Image (cartoon, rainbow, N blue to C red; front, top):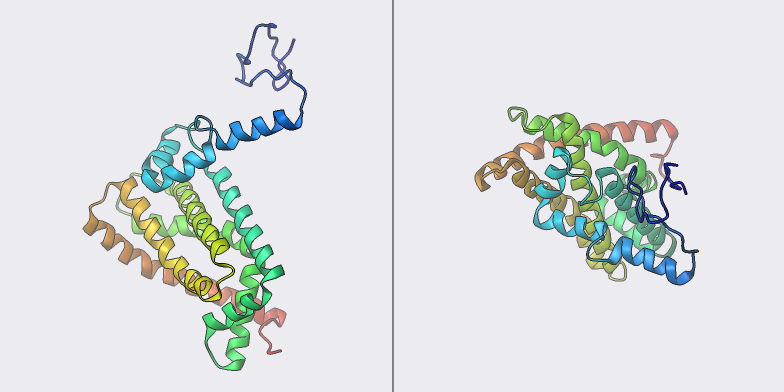
Length: 258
């Protein structure tokens, strides 16, 4: 027989392909077999890459990210796969939230802007547009964040820009997953959700600091200094992005008061 994945000739005694490593599957798909595959892929202690990756990015991010950069690619989910999970989960949340909690969404926009009616309307439009294009923004954020972290560690040559892309993809994804899970828990509680939304950026900055501390093996003092340097760099990029979004919305008429 031949391997169903790569076509290499195999014997009937082979359980795995010697060429590509794929498992030989002869059993017909049933609900029970499908359930066992799901269990093996996501819940089993031995093969649960998503759960293992999620836990290890808390306890030892240098093992996940540093290991991936150094060539260890089998133990954890690769960076783009984890990013895909984060974007999917985040998109699901905002879909549910906009469909079933639209009043809370408007209230949150007003809460964040907290301005005069006309300016508040413009801020809410920006907020709603950000939610609408959050997937695209997430994809665009990774190279920008990588550039920022590379600037902060400009004198340290341990990781190049491409490796900073991987670092930021993992860190951004992990922060997004955590915040989104908390969002799901706080949906029914308007005030709790507002606090979570406001606290999300500081939380992600702290997680970034923790991750980079472990990867670069920084002291607590150096971590604080690097974080303080990262914040103004982040603000500069944030202002530039807001200006670009504002120009776009002005050109399309989205900033016109309703």
